Length: 362
Ligand code: ADP
Ligand code: F6P
Image 1 (cartoon, protein in one colour):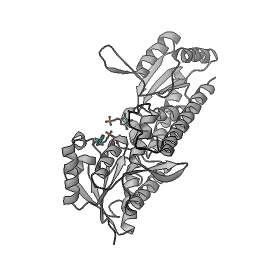
Image 2 (image 1 turned 60 degrees about the vertical axis):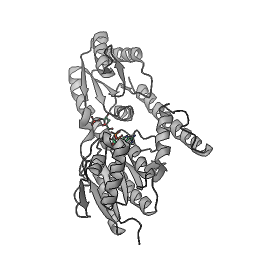
Image 3 (image 1 turned 135 degrees about the horizontal axis):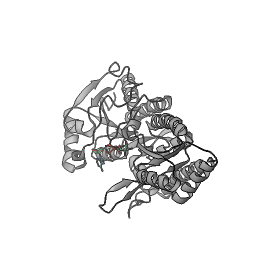
């Protein structure tokens, strides 16, 4: 008989296209294994409020193609407290929830690891448009977000060309520039501005002047929301808005600024997102049934596999140069070398693509 008979599923943090496909995969595969699934509505808040729904294979029909999340999502500060955590554990016991699969980003995985170490087996599945979990090559939702941005950039290109304008487009991604970088590359942007790479403003303005002389009319620049300056009131001001003013005053080219914001989070998931979502959802249920816990499902060298959540969170801190004293103490030499290799690979890929954007300008 299975040790796990009832598994809770939740989506947490910012939603992402493809989350529904993950839910569907978990429910359908669990059912094949004779395991019941229960939907926890509204992320960790739903766990604290005992807000549940039954999930049958029929209940997840017609969602593979839907953006958003049928289980809804929320942010829940109370869950981060020890009191909130104990309430969550108590609610799992009261409702016979033997294990949890948590779909979200790094915050969601921090919550998942806290549940795991307190005795509720939990597995994380990535669901974030940002692609900012360093230990995985891919997060569910990223490809759809890219397609959405590129579609909008293509539209802006038309009107920029007609009016000989420059358009600065700010895209989400938190402190990760991958959405800006990849969409900018694919849409033929004149430049991208991302937190991971130093931006040469003077060289970019010179490039705009030179492009104008060569009769280039429409110009696009994609700026990640993670690039900002802090003003005298200690408020964050998006760098894209400042760049717009600079380009306009220094080149005489009419320049517009647009913030895509949450538009990028919605929409029909692409084939890539539906495929990875299905693979990752199926892997998560496999891991639970093998008695595993405290893991996050990742893509590595194109294969769906898993890593310890603490490994993934520490690799993120290493990548962002934010390691704290003692962070690496629990890891073996091999694991630390693996983390370093993951970070180096990601940095090299970003650098290569960033330089390629510059190489493509006229
Ligand atoms: P994401 O998962 O997309 O990164 P958040 O960072 O907002 O989104 O995290 C989602 C939720 O996960 C939070 O609202 C909170 O309930 C939980 N969470 C975040 N950080 C922690 C933490 N350090 N410990 C426990 N739970 C956390
Ligand atoms: O993590 C996904 C994300 O959309 C980020 O790109 C963005 O910075 C953040 O969430 C926005 O959060 P909210 O939906 O709370 O405004």
